[in-house]
Image 1 (cartoon, each protein chain N blue to C red):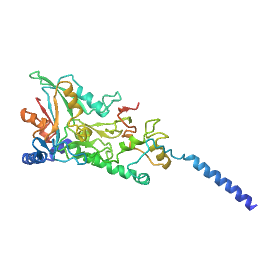
Image 2 (image 1 turned 180 degrees about the vertical axis):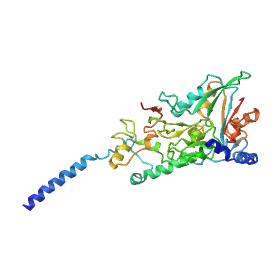
Image 3 (image 1 turned 60 degrees about the vertical axis):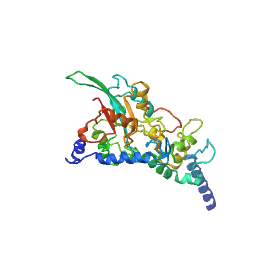
Image 4 (image 1 turned 45 degrees about the horizontal axis):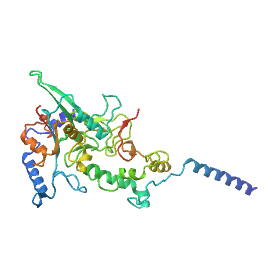
Length: 123
Length: 259
């Protein structure tokens, strides 16, 4: 009797776990331009925000635009070939940020697509 | 109110631009720029052309001269070029759309003399927008360019009120497809950046000055005010020019002639 209850409990737990996985889709990491990133993958995963923060202050306050850790640099390499953007469900930045549930507000101001496109107000 | 504060901050005997100090800076800049390595070749040809890794410094003071005698009434080439360069496209609401340069037409009612001039951020040496900013978002770069750090701007618009030149705009709309070199976003204040991305690239000019030249007017001359050899300094030596609202003693980087 006890073993039956245990097995039933296990089933319920397993079902719950699989549901939990289904709720948060794994991030889609497609490297469009394979090659050397500006830092090792482990460093980028953990510290990209810090690197970006330092670069941003140097760029804006001092006008030094040569350092490799720029947001424009990220977008240049990681924009999706399909959408041309780092945003969207399959976007390099957004898919991971969705998975980690971390708000991504860089692209409210910064261009999410490489190259030169003009700004338009959303209707 | 902030305008009054800007005025009150200066004591009666206090000089804003100390001519001796400026003279020294200009000499220092000239000395630094003029390291001769061979006849005719200087180490740094223009004081403004700093090395890419070097931070902007006070050796340079970027500024402009606007010669209203050459500025044509009805011509808006500078405004168009600015909008294009910085990706400013209005939402069809002229009262609130961002405006970095505007053309103004002036008429002397007594003589009937009319002329026209572009007005933009004057890049003051003593900017009231920086004085009033509660978060330090409004700041002046070492080379005299007044900018907004949109990461710390909270959109309070004190600077919009404080600016005597109406040079700042507030972004009311969600934006998309900004230019990579010109980040802009809803809830922040912005204004003329003196094409800082072009300056840092070493272009040595702004979109408005280029467009004005292309239109055949050459009413806008951009350059380093600290370099006595720059085109703008030479022109400033030749013709009389003034600061707009010189009574406020803000020592603007943009000067006007013929007003």
